[in-house]
Image (cartoon, rainbow, N blue to C red; front, side, top):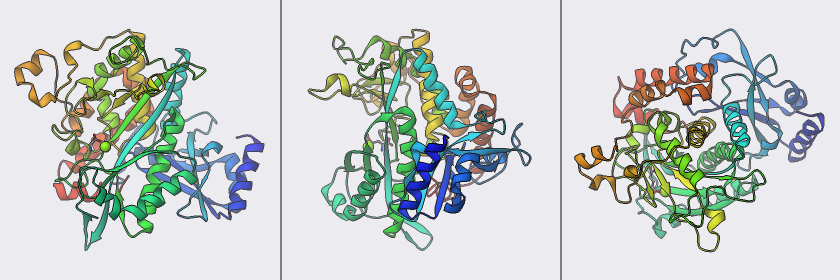
Length: 454
Ligand code: GLU
Ligand code: MG
């Protein structure tokens, strides 16, 4: 970080009266972790970072430490914050946060840094003349604690105005807090589940969108807590209710960011050849990719047919049961609004890894000029297709468990190579560790230990 940037961050923190500045990162289990510096040490910490044991990236969802070469009790990485991410926390005004790169002692990005993985994918895309705009569309529940049980804060229905009434104060404050942190709001509505909400935010360049998603998760959880509520962003916090998705909307633009290269007015869906190649790449890597976008045990309770969470290897126009949806674009702004939506994705993922993996898959499709198979295009609910028809059209179930998804990822050398050995090995180790613990326990244990983690 340059001296002038450091001075600016310190000035803003002092001006706001912040005394603690948290340096945050997201771990291999999708958990946001951090260490904070007092304002008096901020300037020097901005220059030197804060040291963290490398073992932190080898910890599972229950803090169970895994044996991973290159990570352990000996060795440190440094949390080095990106000055562009500095934000005073509206729900805790004496505090600020910054999002960090994990830097090795060599002062180069540490090989296991998730944020660097995404940056590397974005650089690769730029070499191919592409810049991505991304919006992560998150759903969550508002719950209260009764005894040691969480219960939804209301019994409202999908898009119901009644649900909007119940949650009005907390949602309004979340909106204000996001806007105060420079995050624009797109839409808001209640979702299918009791007490479930969807508040979507404006798209942004890919790295910023992943950063924004971390800030979003912090904001939703903290503002709800200030109102005596628990916001659960877990994939399936209530087994009997709808799951929480975090669908990824994305489009690929030219380097001047003037032309949406995913758009073609001539195509029936307004999708360009380049975008079809991207879809081809995503379809080719879908089973392994799901281990990056749906990485927790609880993720696979969500991914089931008939709940719009998606369960099959298919894509389709405006199809909410398709893993990849081609949303119809908006009247009057067709070029700007053309995008793709990746749906088997949830808030338990590390957004840098999820997005890095999605881009790695898509770029492979562009590089190899893959065409998505027309038989995998489904414009009806795939549940309406018979077993024979699904088989004939080469449409399969997405992985149905964390173990299955992990196995798929282990065989996907394109995704693993893109991540690099240290990130890939540690990531896989955590998936195995979580499967090991949770597959031995019951549903109650799984819910309890996912409900309030993300
Ligand atoms: N809740 C659904 C999911 O798990 C998505 C519902 C919707 O289409 O917004 O992804
Ligand atoms: Mg939704």
